[in-house]
Amino acid sequence: MKDPKTPSVRRVAMAKRVADIWLRNHAEPEYRLTVYRGYSREARNLPGLLRSFRDGKTRFAGLKPVSDLGIKMAFDHLTLWSRDQQGLQHLETALQKMGCETSGVF
Image (cartoon, rainbow, N blue to C red; front, side, top):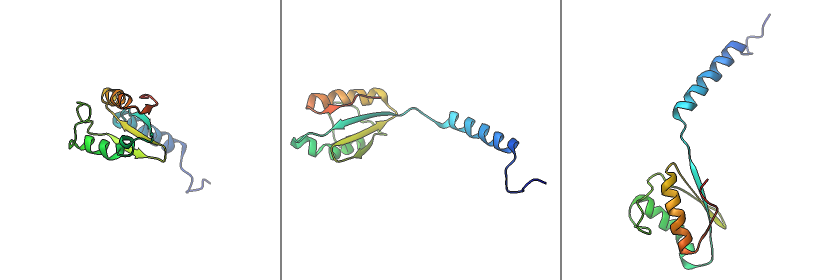
């Protein structure tokens, strides 16, 4: 007799197919950029500046705001992510002109 607590193979396969279909319909690519922080005054204010840029409160190098820009701070770098690849590439170019080192958009 089968143990009632173990799922059947058919149910597991069906759940995997449903999950696969849902992920394919709802998943979108996300691009990341790592900015290594220096010791300049601008680098210390960079997280707040980028948040204001995202919210549309500040202009940054004449770029259009990236509305879904995510910002994560670490000790020596910032990680930025967005679905807008072109917006991140423009932001990377502006940050490099400021003197920041970046990893490139991937």
